[in-house]
Image (cartoon, rainbow, N blue to C red; front, side, top):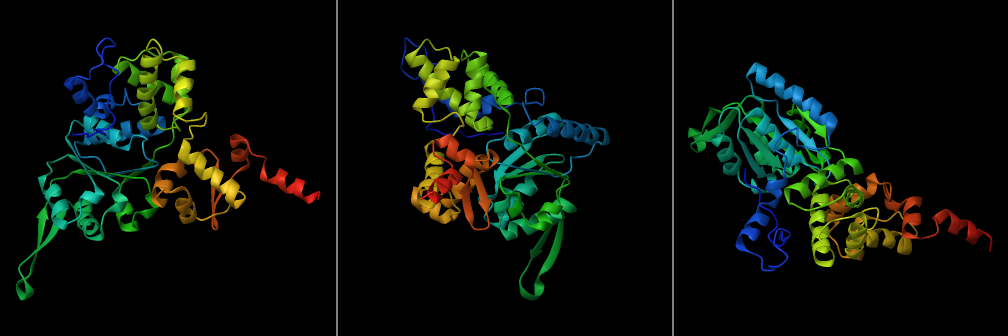
Length: 357
């Protein structure tokens, strides 16, 4: 399983303090950062307890029957571990996994080639499966249901339809927008689960595990301080621990404490709710320019210079979960909690004050 990480996000903590030059092996280590910290089994996979318990039973039943798993669909906000969970399932089943994404399957031969290359029992993981084009989706229908590929040969009057058998496999789909999946595709998944945001305690465990792998010294309160600002998302927690570790190494003795974690995250402009500059700009815009809303997503995107899709996929899930933003038929609006968090007088208080004059 090949995981490619961001080349611009170099991991330099392992470089010795007396030798500031980043060695080639340190760069290579960074390229495999995501893969190195991914859990490989349910024992090391933290969080999603209810989902793990269900999957353990399903996997054990499949092993006893000596049959592949039913097709699975995981949905939820990005960064919660959908791809990692697929790898854990493959490891627990003792089979290979092939990973791709829906945008990469542009032509029919792309999906056909992958399906034809599968071996019996293998897992095919398709990320952002809601973005599959219609042709690729229709090719998947008989493959998922009957393990056949319907193909045609010849032209005009000599056209013949062939049914090519496929080895039995398991398709795992992941999506951040389950509502955009077509009904026929969604109905072909035997197991459908939503991944939930992590608690601060769970994220603290994730951070300590990652710190142990990267040989970063961190105490309990330091881990919890980072967890509180990680928006309930392991991917963000793992990214922040690297940045905090950089700060601790350069400005202090390298150990991450609560004070050092808070100092570094303040410098990164990530507040105690986990809101970054973009989040605060979005919320302040709604309060200051549109009296708390409602306002349309396209208007917000144009005003803060962000893509509307980025706002919907990256910013909104956590803001909605935290109760700082609300979706209404007329657009987005902020909650009273948002006013308090950003230091504004609540909308109701302002209205009451105005009514006195």
